[in-house]
Length: 246
Ligand SMILES: Nc1nc2c(c(=O)[nH]1)N[C@H]1C(S)=C(S)[C@@H](COP(=O)(O)O)O[C@H]1N2
Ligand SMILES: [Mo]
Image (cartoon, rainbow, N blue to C red; front, side, top):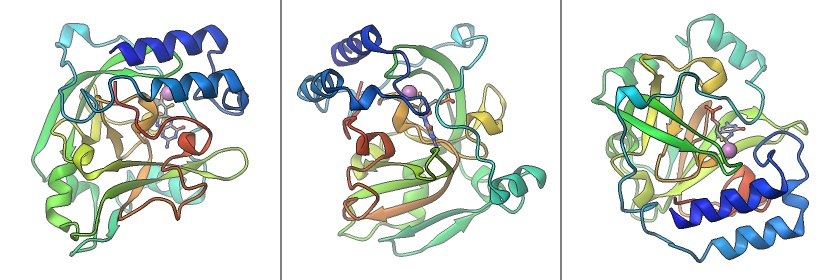
């Protein structure tokens, strides 16, 4: 908690566009220093093993703000929206015993859990929403990570203004946390395109940039150094910490 408040209050004094498109925040040396110093605080407490607070229906924010890159406009994604995500598949592959490609119907037939939790953006704002979905740990138990697996990498369908895709990663402990879910519903409705339809990660124990939207592939791997700039996530490649526990 200390760490989150420290990060968000320090950052918001400088700029409010931390996770937005085309910002200069991560070029800023002061911001890099703050982010790096924050990394040592409260490491591996709630973010890895503790439970994020769960709220009641009365606490749900009237509107769930959207943030980040624009909703994907690729023909692939438009096609999914047009067919109501009938042709969408969530590929789970990499270092697993059983590679799979799950339809939304298959995901919805799995045991679903509900959480009313707070989403904390590093920019310094929070919203409370009700998420329903399948535990990532359940999906992993189906595909069975191999012994050398250490990370779960989320590949997303959106890109920044240079065409670089958004991606994120968790270690297997964070992935198996009971509140780490592949969310299908937000506030009792299928997640809308702007909030990451049809599948987004929701990990309330970590800062908002970890909760990847528009996920269509989950890669199980022993490392993430082979991807993009090698830091384990889009914002990590731009100076944010890989560990984003609250
Ligand atoms: N694919 C993708 N996921 C993303 C982002 C993004 O730009 N692309 N932005 C992240 C950030 S910084 C935040 S705060 C949340 C915003 O989620 P929301 O739009 O549902 O509020 O999504 C996170 N997941
Ligand atoms: Mo964010």
